[in-house]
Length: 219
Image 1: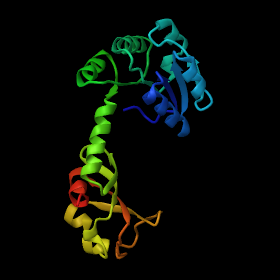
Image 2: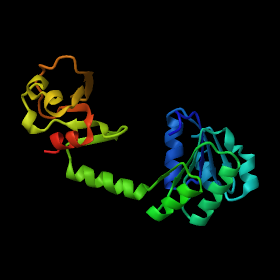
Image 3: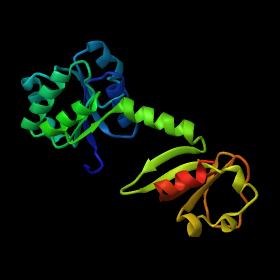
Image 4: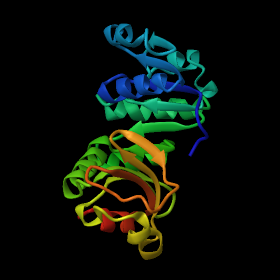
């Protein structure tokens, strides 16, 4: 994976590409947004660093974008798989450092990886899995997978832990889970006192093995 990017080129401003470009811009990233549709460019030009009307399937147009100077190129193109293949081919030829694309199927993902995409995501699949996970485990509010099987999660304190302290529950010893932050009444604070009793509506930020977190906080 690339290091934290400061300059990102987003090509194709459908729902996915538009939201990614806006999200990056709000995080302080320098974003050049590119699309063939002038109307969409006008909608985003005041949000991102720069926005241009260009055809990403045209090699000369991509040359003018100096794609090699960006830390990452994100492709939000979805109307034509053939156009996506052509764009990635040109980007590789022009020295793009890191290419992120989105695909609709697993076969498309495999093809894009083979022709040079560094990372390919399947947005619909990932959203579906997250939705299923949220329905199956309503106590797990947010989940962030780290390397290997490690994860950080924001969880609702289950009723089985009400009126018990972290010292009594002993998450670290029993489940190899570390509670880092307690969120109560919307206020977050680092956990320094393990004798504090947990109550209804409390939330915790915890770190540990993914399976252990799901097991403990799914009830």
